[in-house]
Image 1 (spheres, rainbow, N blue to C red):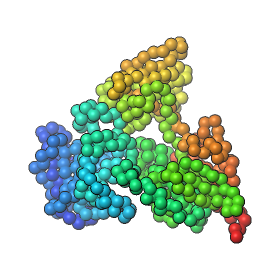
Image 2 (image 1 turned 180 degrees about the vertical axis):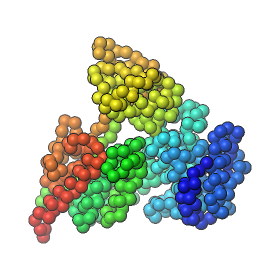
Image 3 (image 1 turned 90 degrees about the vertical axis):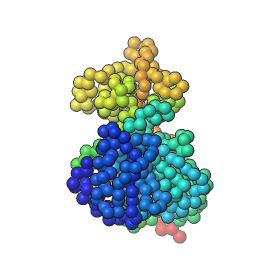
Image 4 (image 1 turned 90 degrees about the horizontal axis):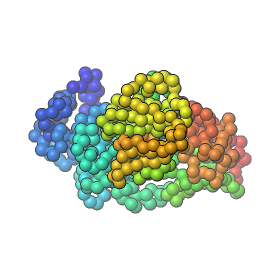
Length: 520
Protein backbone atom coordinates (compact mmCIF):
# COMPACT_ATOMS: atom_id res chain seq x y z
CA UNK A 1 0.00 0.00 0.00
CA UNK A 2 2.89 2.35 0.76
CA UNK A 3 5.10 3.67 -2.04
CA UNK A 4 8.77 2.72 -2.00
CA UNK A 5 10.02 6.24 -1.29
CA UNK A 6 7.68 6.53 1.70
CA UNK A 7 8.81 3.15 2.99
CA UNK A 8 12.39 4.37 2.85
CA UNK A 9 11.51 7.41 4.95
CA UNK A 10 9.54 5.36 7.48
CA UNK A 11 12.35 2.84 7.80
CA UNK A 12 14.64 5.70 8.80
CA UNK A 13 12.13 7.02 11.35
CA UNK A 14 11.80 3.60 12.94
CA UNK A 15 15.45 3.63 13.88
CA UNK A 16 14.23 5.76 16.80
CA UNK A 17 12.11 2.94 18.26
CA UNK A 18 13.42 1.86 21.66
CA UNK A 19 10.83 -0.81 22.48
CA UNK A 20 8.93 -3.50 20.60
CA UNK A 21 5.55 -2.35 19.29
CA UNK A 22 2.50 -4.40 18.29
CA UNK A 23 -0.05 -3.25 15.70
CA UNK A 24 -3.18 -5.10 16.78
CA UNK A 25 -6.04 -4.79 14.28
CA UNK A 26 -9.76 -5.46 14.54
CA UNK A 27 -10.86 -6.11 10.97
CA UNK A 28 -13.98 -6.95 9.02
CA UNK A 29 -14.45 -8.12 5.45
CA UNK A 30 -14.97 -4.67 3.94
CA UNK A 31 -12.60 -2.81 1.61
CA UNK A 32 -11.34 -0.48 4.35
CA UNK A 33 -10.37 -3.48 6.46
CA UNK A 34 -8.41 -4.86 3.54
CA UNK A 35 -6.66 -1.51 3.13
CA UNK A 36 -5.90 -1.35 6.85
CA UNK A 37 -4.36 -4.81 6.83
CA UNK A 38 -2.17 -3.85 3.90
CA UNK A 39 -1.04 -0.62 5.56
CA UNK A 40 -0.21 -2.22 8.90
CA UNK A 41 1.58 -5.18 7.33
CA UNK A 42 3.65 -2.75 5.26
CA UNK A 43 4.62 -0.80 8.38
CA UNK A 44 5.43 -3.96 10.35
CA UNK A 45 7.69 -5.09 7.53
CA UNK A 46 9.91 -2.03 7.91
CA UNK A 47 11.32 -2.81 11.36
CA UNK A 48 12.04 -5.89 13.45
CA UNK A 49 10.70 -3.96 16.43
CA UNK A 50 7.18 -3.81 14.95
CA UNK A 51 4.82 -6.77 14.61
CA UNK A 52 1.29 -7.14 13.22
CA UNK A 53 -1.64 -9.03 14.72
CA UNK A 54 -5.27 -9.29 13.58
CA UNK A 55 -6.52 -10.65 16.91
CA UNK A 56 -8.09 -7.40 18.10
CA UNK A 57 -11.64 -7.37 19.51
CA UNK A 58 -12.58 -3.67 19.45
CA UNK A 59 -16.23 -2.74 18.86
CA UNK A 60 -15.26 -0.54 15.91
CA UNK A 61 -14.25 -2.24 12.68
CA UNK A 62 -11.84 -1.53 11.15
CA UNK A 63 -9.63 -0.19 13.93
CA UNK A 64 -6.21 -0.90 15.35
CA UNK A 65 -4.29 -0.50 18.56
CA UNK A 66 -0.66 0.55 18.76
CA UNK A 67 0.71 -0.80 22.04
CA UNK A 68 4.11 -1.32 23.58
CA UNK A 69 4.89 -5.01 24.06
CA UNK A 70 4.67 -5.98 27.73
CA UNK A 71 3.59 -2.50 28.86
CA UNK A 72 0.53 -0.24 29.09
CA UNK A 73 1.40 2.52 26.59
CA UNK A 74 -1.11 2.51 23.75
CA UNK A 75 -2.94 4.57 21.13
CA UNK A 76 -5.96 3.54 19.03
CA UNK A 77 -7.18 4.59 15.59
CA UNK A 78 -10.65 3.73 14.26
CA UNK A 79 -10.35 4.04 10.50
CA UNK A 80 -7.40 4.63 8.19
CA UNK A 81 -5.28 7.57 9.38
CA UNK A 82 -4.12 8.70 5.98
CA UNK A 83 -4.17 12.20 4.47
CA UNK A 84 -3.50 14.82 7.14
CA UNK A 85 -3.56 12.13 9.84
CA UNK A 86 -0.72 10.00 8.46
CA UNK A 87 1.76 12.05 10.48
CA UNK A 88 -0.36 11.33 13.58
CA UNK A 89 0.01 7.61 12.91
CA UNK A 90 3.81 7.80 12.58
CA UNK A 91 4.21 9.97 15.68
CA UNK A 92 1.99 7.60 17.70
CA UNK A 93 4.08 4.64 16.55
CA UNK A 94 7.32 6.35 17.56
CA UNK A 95 6.01 7.60 20.90
CA UNK A 96 4.55 4.25 21.92
CA UNK A 97 7.92 2.82 20.90
CA UNK A 98 9.71 5.07 23.38
CA UNK A 99 10.67 8.11 21.33
CA UNK A 100 9.80 11.10 23.58
CA UNK A 101 7.13 13.52 22.34
CA UNK A 102 8.11 17.16 21.82
CA UNK A 103 6.39 18.49 24.92
CA UNK A 104 7.94 20.79 27.52
CA UNK A 105 9.17 19.05 30.66
CA UNK A 106 6.79 21.06 32.87
CA UNK A 107 3.83 19.93 30.77
CA UNK A 108 4.99 16.32 30.86
CA UNK A 109 5.01 16.43 34.66
CA UNK A 110 1.60 18.07 34.65
CA UNK A 111 0.21 15.30 32.40
CA UNK A 112 1.65 12.60 34.65
CA UNK A 113 0.15 14.27 37.72
CA UNK A 114 -3.43 14.31 36.37
CA UNK A 115 -5.64 12.44 38.80
CA UNK A 116 -8.46 10.42 37.31
CA UNK A 117 -9.34 8.16 34.41
CA UNK A 118 -9.76 9.93 31.09
CA UNK A 119 -11.23 8.17 28.04
CA UNK A 120 -11.00 10.52 25.05
CA UNK A 121 -12.61 10.06 21.64
CA UNK A 122 -11.70 12.44 18.81
CA UNK A 123 -13.71 12.50 15.58
CA UNK A 124 -11.63 13.66 12.65
CA UNK A 125 -11.89 14.11 8.91
CA UNK A 126 -9.08 13.14 6.56
CA UNK A 127 -9.40 16.55 4.90
CA UNK A 128 -9.27 18.48 8.19
CA UNK A 129 -6.09 20.47 8.79
CA UNK A 130 -6.81 21.27 12.43
CA UNK A 131 -7.60 17.70 13.48
CA UNK A 132 -4.00 16.40 13.60
CA UNK A 133 -3.07 18.91 16.31
CA UNK A 134 -5.78 17.55 18.61
CA UNK A 135 -5.16 13.90 17.72
CA UNK A 136 -1.41 14.21 18.22
CA UNK A 137 -1.77 16.07 21.51
CA UNK A 138 -4.12 13.49 23.01
CA UNK A 139 -2.08 10.59 21.62
CA UNK A 140 1.05 11.95 23.27
CA UNK A 141 -0.78 12.51 26.56
CA UNK A 142 -2.08 8.93 26.53
CA UNK A 143 1.48 7.62 26.13
CA UNK A 144 2.75 9.78 29.00
CA UNK A 145 -0.08 8.94 31.43
CA UNK A 146 -1.52 5.39 31.35
CA UNK A 147 -4.77 6.62 32.93
CA UNK A 148 -5.46 8.57 29.74
CA UNK A 149 -6.88 6.60 26.81
CA UNK A 150 -7.49 8.01 23.36
CA UNK A 151 -9.10 6.76 20.17
CA UNK A 152 -9.04 8.83 16.98
CA UNK A 153 -12.12 8.11 14.85
CA UNK A 154 -12.60 8.80 11.15
CA UNK A 155 -16.06 10.33 11.18
CA UNK A 156 -16.66 9.59 7.50
CA UNK A 157 -16.16 5.88 8.17
CA UNK A 158 -18.36 5.67 11.27
CA UNK A 159 -21.36 7.63 10.06
CA UNK A 160 -23.79 5.96 12.48
CA UNK A 161 -21.87 7.36 15.44
CA UNK A 162 -21.63 10.77 13.79
CA UNK A 163 -25.39 10.87 13.21
CA UNK A 164 -26.22 9.61 16.69
CA UNK A 165 -24.04 12.23 18.32
CA UNK A 166 -25.09 14.97 15.89
CA UNK A 167 -21.52 15.75 14.86
CA UNK A 168 -21.30 18.33 12.08
CA UNK A 169 -17.83 19.73 12.59
CA UNK A 170 -14.36 18.44 13.40
CA UNK A 171 -12.27 17.99 15.38
CA UNK A 172 -14.89 17.00 17.95
CA UNK A 173 -13.65 15.59 21.25
CA UNK A 174 -15.55 13.56 23.82
CA UNK A 175 -14.32 12.74 27.33
CA UNK A 176 -15.81 9.77 29.16
CA UNK A 177 -18.71 9.81 26.72
CA UNK A 178 -19.55 13.51 27.11
CA UNK A 179 -18.71 16.46 24.80
CA UNK A 180 -15.38 17.96 25.84
CA UNK A 181 -14.23 20.37 23.12
CA UNK A 182 -14.60 21.35 19.49
CA UNK A 183 -11.94 22.84 17.24
CA UNK A 184 -8.18 22.97 17.25
CA UNK A 185 -6.46 22.50 20.62
CA UNK A 186 -2.91 21.89 21.75
CA UNK A 187 -1.55 20.23 24.89
CA UNK A 188 -1.56 23.50 26.86
CA UNK A 189 -5.23 24.17 26.08
CA UNK A 190 -6.28 20.60 26.85
CA UNK A 191 -4.44 20.71 30.17
CA UNK A 192 -6.11 24.03 31.00
CA UNK A 193 -9.53 22.34 30.65
CA UNK A 194 -8.49 19.29 32.66
CA UNK A 195 -6.51 21.11 35.33
CA UNK A 196 -8.07 24.45 36.30
CA UNK A 197 -5.04 25.52 38.31
CA UNK A 198 -2.70 25.19 35.31
CA UNK A 199 -3.63 28.63 33.98
CA UNK A 200 -2.94 30.16 37.38
CA UNK A 201 0.48 28.49 37.58
CA UNK A 202 1.33 29.59 34.03
CA UNK A 203 0.36 33.16 34.87
CA UNK A 204 2.47 33.10 38.04
CA UNK A 205 5.57 32.31 35.98
CA UNK A 206 5.06 35.48 33.94
CA UNK A 207 4.83 37.89 36.86
CA UNK A 208 8.56 38.43 37.18
CA UNK A 209 9.44 38.53 33.47
CA UNK A 210 11.82 41.41 32.76
CA UNK A 211 10.75 44.11 30.28
CA UNK A 212 11.31 43.37 26.59
CA UNK A 213 12.82 45.53 23.90
CA UNK A 214 10.15 44.26 21.49
CA UNK A 215 6.97 42.45 22.49
CA UNK A 216 4.99 40.95 19.60
CA UNK A 217 1.37 39.88 19.83
CA UNK A 218 0.39 37.19 17.34
CA UNK A 219 2.32 34.30 15.79
CA UNK A 220 0.99 34.25 12.24
CA UNK A 221 3.18 35.18 9.27
CA UNK A 222 3.47 38.83 10.39
CA UNK A 223 4.25 38.02 14.02
CA UNK A 224 6.72 35.25 13.21
CA UNK A 225 8.54 37.46 10.72
CA UNK A 226 8.68 40.33 13.22
CA UNK A 227 10.09 38.03 15.92
CA UNK A 228 12.84 36.71 13.67
CA UNK A 229 13.89 40.16 12.52
CA UNK A 230 13.91 41.52 16.07
CA UNK A 231 15.93 38.61 17.45
CA UNK A 232 18.46 38.94 14.63
CA UNK A 233 19.01 42.54 15.74
CA UNK A 234 19.97 41.29 19.19
CA UNK A 235 16.85 42.71 20.82
CA UNK A 236 15.23 41.11 23.85
CA UNK A 237 12.19 39.71 22.07
CA UNK A 238 8.93 38.29 23.40
CA UNK A 239 6.22 36.63 21.30
CA UNK A 240 2.70 36.15 22.65
CA UNK A 241 1.51 33.16 20.63
CA UNK A 242 -2.11 32.08 20.97
CA UNK A 243 -1.41 29.70 18.09
CA UNK A 244 1.36 29.63 15.51
CA UNK A 245 0.20 30.27 11.98
CA UNK A 246 -3.03 32.05 12.85
CA UNK A 247 -5.44 31.95 9.91
CA UNK A 248 -2.79 30.13 7.88
CA UNK A 249 -3.61 27.05 9.95
CA UNK A 250 -7.06 27.02 8.33
CA UNK A 251 -5.76 27.40 4.77
CA UNK A 252 -5.78 24.34 2.54
CA UNK A 253 -3.55 24.80 -0.50
CA UNK A 254 -1.00 27.62 -0.75
CA UNK A 255 0.50 28.13 -4.19
CA UNK A 256 1.46 31.83 -4.16
CA UNK A 257 4.04 32.01 -1.36
CA UNK A 258 7.04 32.96 -3.42
CA UNK A 259 9.81 30.30 -3.73
CA UNK A 260 7.48 27.63 -2.30
CA UNK A 261 5.63 26.17 -5.27
CA UNK A 262 2.99 24.40 -3.20
CA UNK A 263 2.33 23.80 0.49
CA UNK A 264 -0.49 23.57 3.01
CA UNK A 265 -1.41 25.83 5.91
CA UNK A 266 -0.37 23.51 8.76
CA UNK A 267 2.97 22.78 7.08
CA UNK A 268 3.74 26.45 6.62
CA UNK A 269 2.65 27.18 10.20
CA UNK A 270 4.98 24.47 11.51
CA UNK A 271 7.80 25.93 9.42
CA UNK A 272 7.13 29.40 10.85
CA UNK A 273 7.28 28.05 14.39
CA UNK A 274 10.47 26.06 13.74
CA UNK A 275 12.13 29.13 12.24
CA UNK A 276 11.19 31.34 15.21
CA UNK A 277 12.46 28.74 17.68
CA UNK A 278 15.90 28.88 16.08
CA UNK A 279 16.33 32.32 17.65
CA UNK A 280 16.44 33.70 21.17
CA UNK A 281 12.74 34.54 21.37
CA UNK A 282 10.76 34.08 24.57
CA UNK A 283 7.54 32.43 23.42
CA UNK A 284 4.57 33.04 25.69
CA UNK A 285 2.19 30.32 24.55
CA UNK A 286 -1.61 30.11 24.72
CA UNK A 287 -2.02 33.72 25.86
CA UNK A 288 -3.85 36.69 24.34
CA UNK A 289 -3.79 40.41 24.94
CA UNK A 290 -6.66 42.07 26.79
CA UNK A 291 -5.48 45.67 27.15
CA UNK A 292 -2.73 47.97 25.89
CA UNK A 293 -1.54 50.68 28.27
CA UNK A 294 0.72 53.11 26.35
CA UNK A 295 4.07 54.08 27.83
CA UNK A 296 4.41 57.03 30.19
CA UNK A 297 7.05 58.57 32.41
CA UNK A 298 9.31 57.73 34.11
CA UNK A 299 10.05 54.30 32.60
CA UNK A 300 8.48 54.77 29.16
CA UNK A 301 7.46 51.13 29.00
CA UNK A 302 4.29 49.97 27.25
CA UNK A 303 2.18 47.51 29.23
CA UNK A 304 0.24 44.60 27.78
CA UNK A 305 -2.36 43.11 30.12
CA UNK A 306 -3.10 39.49 29.17
CA UNK A 307 -6.47 37.78 29.47
CA UNK A 308 -4.98 35.83 32.39
CA UNK A 309 -4.57 39.14 34.25
CA UNK A 310 -0.78 39.20 34.10
CA UNK A 311 0.98 42.27 32.67
CA UNK A 312 4.09 42.30 30.48
CA UNK A 313 6.13 45.43 29.74
CA UNK A 314 8.16 46.41 26.71
CA UNK A 315 9.93 49.38 25.17
CA UNK A 316 8.12 48.71 21.87
CA UNK A 317 5.11 46.64 20.88
CA UNK A 318 4.21 45.07 17.52
CA UNK A 319 0.54 44.16 17.06
CA UNK A 320 0.16 41.24 14.64
CA UNK A 321 -3.08 39.77 15.97
CA UNK A 322 -4.50 38.83 12.57
CA UNK A 323 -8.17 38.24 11.85
CA UNK A 324 -10.96 35.73 12.41
CA UNK A 325 -13.94 34.50 10.43
CA UNK A 326 -16.67 37.13 10.12
CA UNK A 327 -20.01 35.88 11.42
CA UNK A 328 -23.44 36.44 9.92
CA UNK A 329 -24.79 37.90 13.14
CA UNK A 330 -28.29 36.56 12.54
CA UNK A 331 -30.64 34.59 14.81
CA UNK A 332 -29.83 30.88 14.88
CA UNK A 333 -26.16 31.20 13.91
CA UNK A 334 -24.75 30.89 17.42
CA UNK A 335 -27.38 28.38 18.51
CA UNK A 336 -26.49 26.00 15.68
CA UNK A 337 -22.74 26.56 15.57
CA UNK A 338 -21.14 23.11 15.09
CA UNK A 339 -24.66 21.73 14.66
CA UNK A 340 -25.00 22.66 11.01
CA UNK A 341 -23.37 26.10 10.97
CA UNK A 342 -19.74 25.72 9.88
CA UNK A 343 -16.88 27.92 8.74
CA UNK A 344 -14.40 25.46 7.19
CA UNK A 345 -15.57 23.51 4.12
CA UNK A 346 -12.32 21.55 3.96
CA UNK A 347 -12.70 20.27 7.53
CA UNK A 348 -16.42 19.79 7.82
CA UNK A 349 -17.56 19.19 4.23
CA UNK A 350 -17.35 15.37 4.45
CA UNK A 351 -20.00 15.33 7.20
CA UNK A 352 -22.55 16.71 4.74
CA UNK A 353 -22.14 14.03 2.11
CA UNK A 354 -25.40 13.67 0.21
CA UNK A 355 -27.01 16.57 2.08
CA UNK A 356 -28.17 20.06 1.04
CA UNK A 357 -26.06 23.01 2.14
CA UNK A 358 -25.80 26.75 1.66
CA UNK A 359 -22.72 28.92 1.32
CA UNK A 360 -23.05 32.59 2.26
CA UNK A 361 -20.63 34.87 0.44
CA UNK A 362 -19.78 35.40 -3.23
CA UNK A 363 -16.10 36.30 -2.90
CA UNK A 364 -13.23 33.96 -3.67
CA UNK A 365 -13.56 32.06 -0.39
CA UNK A 366 -17.31 31.57 -0.81
CA UNK A 367 -17.15 30.45 -4.42
CA UNK A 368 -14.20 28.14 -3.72
CA UNK A 369 -16.16 26.63 -0.83
CA UNK A 370 -19.21 26.08 -3.05
CA UNK A 371 -17.08 24.37 -5.72
CA UNK A 372 -15.43 22.17 -3.11
CA UNK A 373 -18.71 21.19 -1.47
CA UNK A 374 -20.45 20.51 -4.78
CA UNK A 375 -18.31 17.40 -5.16
CA UNK A 376 -19.53 16.03 -1.82
CA UNK A 377 -23.07 17.20 -1.10
CA UNK A 378 -26.29 16.72 -3.05
CA UNK A 379 -26.88 20.44 -3.65
CA UNK A 380 -25.27 23.80 -2.88
CA UNK A 381 -27.13 27.10 -2.67
CA UNK A 382 -24.76 30.08 -2.79
CA UNK A 383 -26.14 33.37 -1.47
CA UNK A 384 -24.56 36.62 -2.64
CA UNK A 385 -25.70 39.74 -0.81
CA UNK A 386 -25.18 42.07 -3.78
CA UNK A 387 -26.14 41.82 -7.45
CA UNK A 388 -22.80 40.39 -8.60
CA UNK A 389 -20.38 37.68 -7.47
CA UNK A 390 -17.04 39.13 -6.40
CA UNK A 391 -14.89 36.07 -7.01
CA UNK A 392 -12.31 35.80 -9.79
CA UNK A 393 -13.89 35.09 -13.18
CA UNK A 394 -12.21 31.69 -13.50
CA UNK A 395 -13.85 30.63 -10.24
CA UNK A 396 -17.24 32.00 -11.28
CA UNK A 397 -17.06 30.11 -14.57
CA UNK A 398 -16.27 26.88 -12.75
CA UNK A 399 -19.09 27.44 -10.25
CA UNK A 400 -21.72 28.18 -12.89
CA UNK A 401 -20.78 25.03 -14.80
CA UNK A 402 -21.81 22.80 -11.88
CA UNK A 403 -25.27 21.27 -12.17
CA UNK A 404 -25.91 20.90 -8.45
CA UNK A 405 -25.28 24.56 -7.58
CA UNK A 406 -27.84 27.37 -7.39
CA UNK A 407 -26.64 30.97 -7.15
CA UNK A 408 -28.97 33.48 -5.46
CA UNK A 409 -28.01 37.12 -5.98
CA UNK A 410 -29.30 40.00 -3.86
CA UNK A 411 -30.00 37.46 -1.14
CA UNK A 412 -29.41 38.64 2.43
CA UNK A 413 -29.43 35.88 5.03
CA UNK A 414 -31.75 36.84 7.91
CA UNK A 415 -32.07 33.65 9.98
CA UNK A 416 -30.67 30.14 10.39
CA UNK A 417 -33.50 27.73 11.10
CA UNK A 418 -33.27 24.52 13.09
CA UNK A 419 -35.21 21.84 14.93
CA UNK A 420 -33.51 22.42 18.26
CA UNK A 421 -30.71 19.97 17.51
CA UNK A 422 -29.49 20.63 13.97
CA UNK A 423 -29.92 23.10 11.12
CA UNK A 424 -33.03 22.54 9.01
CA UNK A 425 -33.06 25.61 6.78
CA UNK A 426 -32.19 29.21 6.08
CA UNK A 427 -34.26 32.34 5.55
CA UNK A 428 -33.10 35.18 3.30
CA UNK A 429 -34.48 38.49 2.07
CA UNK A 430 -34.46 38.68 -1.72
CA UNK A 431 -34.19 41.59 -4.11
CA UNK A 432 -37.98 41.73 -4.13
CA UNK A 433 -37.93 42.68 -0.43
CA UNK A 434 -39.67 39.45 0.55
CA UNK A 435 -38.36 36.69 2.79
CA UNK A 436 -37.73 33.26 1.28
CA UNK A 437 -36.94 29.92 2.89
CA UNK A 438 -34.49 27.23 1.76
CA UNK A 439 -34.59 23.78 3.30
CA UNK A 440 -31.11 22.37 3.95
CA UNK A 441 -28.91 20.67 6.53
CA UNK A 442 -25.85 22.89 6.64
CA UNK A 443 -24.75 26.53 6.32
CA UNK A 444 -21.12 27.42 5.53
CA UNK A 445 -20.31 31.03 6.38
CA UNK A 446 -17.73 32.57 4.03
CA UNK A 447 -18.14 36.35 4.28
CA UNK A 448 -14.60 37.43 5.00
CA UNK A 449 -12.58 38.26 8.08
CA UNK A 450 -12.67 40.59 11.07
CA UNK A 451 -9.46 41.95 12.63
CA UNK A 452 -8.74 40.74 16.17
CA UNK A 453 -8.57 44.23 17.61
CA UNK A 454 -11.64 44.60 19.84
CA UNK A 455 -9.42 44.93 22.89
CA UNK A 456 -7.50 47.86 21.35
CA UNK A 457 -10.39 50.24 20.63
CA UNK A 458 -9.64 52.49 23.62
CA UNK A 459 -5.86 52.48 23.15
CA UNK A 460 -5.08 53.60 19.61
CA UNK A 461 -6.66 54.63 16.31
CA UNK A 462 -8.78 52.05 14.49
CA UNK A 463 -10.86 52.32 11.35
CA UNK A 464 -14.62 51.82 11.33
CA UNK A 465 -13.86 48.21 10.33
CA UNK A 466 -11.60 47.68 13.35
CA UNK A 467 -8.31 47.76 11.44
CA UNK A 468 -5.29 49.33 13.16
CA UNK A 469 -4.36 52.51 11.30
CA UNK A 470 -0.68 52.44 10.28
CA UNK A 471 1.63 54.53 8.13
CA UNK A 472 4.22 53.30 5.62
CA UNK A 473 6.56 52.37 8.49
CA UNK A 474 3.89 50.33 10.31
CA UNK A 475 3.66 53.03 13.00
CA UNK A 476 0.35 53.34 14.84
CA UNK A 477 -1.11 56.43 16.49
CA UNK A 478 0.86 55.55 19.67
CA UNK A 479 4.63 56.19 19.51
CA UNK A 480 6.57 52.98 20.04
CA UNK A 481 3.61 50.77 19.07
CA UNK A 482 3.68 49.22 15.60
CA UNK A 483 1.33 46.87 13.77
CA UNK A 484 1.50 44.45 10.84
CA UNK A 485 -0.57 41.99 8.86
CA UNK A 486 -4.30 41.37 8.52
CA UNK A 487 -5.19 43.39 11.62
CA UNK A 488 -4.04 46.62 9.93
CA UNK A 489 -5.05 48.96 7.13
CA UNK A 490 -2.42 47.50 4.79
CA UNK A 491 -4.16 46.49 1.52
CA UNK A 492 -4.24 42.91 0.23
CA UNK A 493 -4.54 40.41 3.06
CA UNK A 494 -2.04 37.88 1.76
CA UNK A 495 0.50 35.65 3.53
CA UNK A 496 3.42 37.09 1.61
CA UNK A 497 2.26 40.65 2.34
CA UNK A 498 1.90 39.91 6.08
CA UNK A 499 5.39 38.39 6.17
CA UNK A 500 6.90 41.50 4.62
CA UNK A 501 4.90 43.81 6.87
CA UNK A 502 6.12 41.91 9.94
CA UNK A 503 9.71 42.45 8.87
CA UNK A 504 9.02 46.12 8.19
CA UNK A 505 7.40 46.62 11.59
CA UNK A 506 10.35 45.00 13.33
CA UNK A 507 12.86 47.14 11.49
CA UNK A 508 10.83 50.22 12.32
CA UNK A 509 10.76 49.21 15.99
CA UNK A 510 14.55 48.79 15.93
CA UNK A 511 14.94 52.22 14.36
CA UNK A 512 12.70 53.67 17.09
CA UNK A 513 14.75 51.98 19.83
CA UNK A 514 18.14 53.21 18.67
CA UNK A 515 16.78 56.77 18.67
CA UNK A 516 15.34 56.56 22.18
CA UNK A 517 17.08 58.70 24.79
CA UNK A 518 19.38 56.70 27.06
CA UNK A 519 17.68 55.70 30.31
CA UNK A 520 19.24 56.29 33.69
